[in-house]
Image (cartoon, rainbow, N blue to C red):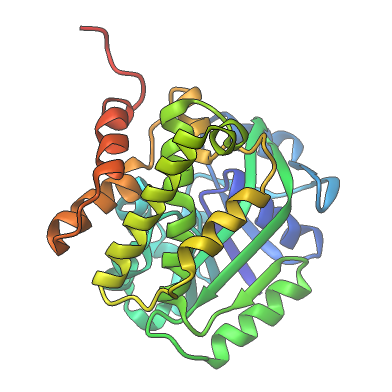
Amino acid sequence: MRIAIMGAGATGGYFGALLARTGEDVGFIARGDHLAAMRRSGLRVESQRAGQFTVPVFATDDPGSVGPVDLVLFCVKSYDTEGAGEAIRPLVGPTTTIVTIQNGVDNAERLALRYGSGAVLGGLAFIEATIAAPGVIAHLSPFGRIVFGELAGGASERAQRLEDQLRAGGVDAQASTAMTEALWEKFLFITPLAGLTSLTRLPIGPLRECPETWALFRQCTEEVWRAGRAAGVELPDDAVERSLANTRRIAPTFKSSMQRDLERGKRLELEALNGYMVRQGAALGIPTPVNGVIYGALKPHVDGPPEPG
């Protein structure tokens, strides 16, 4: 299987490195110092789950130098979906499958408008990882899983075949028959987590320990659940409690990727998370006061540190 990792940052780099380690033909599309380090010294992974290893890689900033592949793992930040969606055109042949591994719930639909629903599978990842240094991926927790499936739901031969291929390549992968629900359940988990860790500039432990902040966390989660249900997504009645239970289980030192981006002065995925919730709430008539405060407070940081006025 020929594979391209579009956006070989922390998430894409980790899963791509696992596949390259088992001998899959993987091309990494990256940029900047990270790309230069990968070309010079390969890709280094330091993982609680997979151990420490370095793989030599083919890395480029030009998708055209890779050419058509069997699988594109589309791992760019949500704000780059449109630009990167056009940039992958040289990677997409008549039998290529594109799997979106991004935060947010509408990225796959946006790619399907460009390439057709037959070329795109929705997807998500459960992972805590960061670029520790150029060319070095730090995988910071024992979980690291990809879930993907047909946008219309149901089982498919290509999704099951891809699950088998990814598992053979060392990736914890699962084909879902209810992808929309899976995307929204991840959204239910990540939106309050990203928003409130970023707003407070704290990892999850202190948020859980403060009753007032944990009450805000619950309210934010409930807003997402109500909006999803109003949009026709079949979120279970106990989805909020299960999401909060999952949040209680993660390490107290956990930081969301949006919080890490904020700390580094990088662009934020706010529009795909709390911003999306505010817009959806307004469109559906669902009050979203906690998401509104998070969105309003972090909006000046969306494009990086605000200029002093």
